[in-house]
Image (cartoon, rainbow, N blue to C red; front, side, top):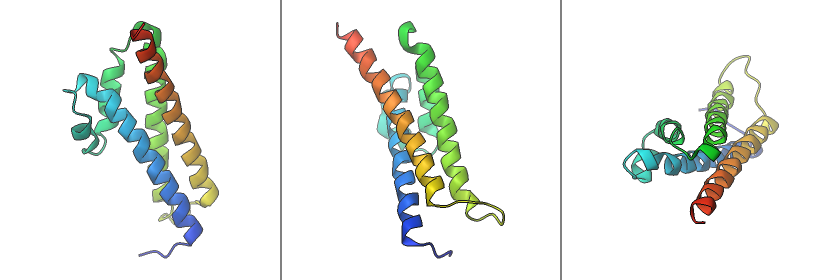
Length: 127
């Protein structure tokens, strides 16, 4: 096993938590069209993104395009987080704490953007 500096482990941990938090929100979004069980969706690797992609197709027209684009952006960021982590084991892979922190920031921006859309949709539906 590779020995990593404490700062690197902390950066990887922050990124992992951000990715997991984003996947949890995606599972919640996807549960609408997948039987309503966000926990079951979240428990299956990759299922949160797939379910969210299916669900946002049925979002209200006022939010649909933005939901679709933001879920796709989330998928890209999740893939980039995995690629950053795997790059550590490549001979020519370059990763450092700044790389992980940058990916973390993008994951959190996706999470925040999705949360705003979810809240706006519910606020509008409640009116």
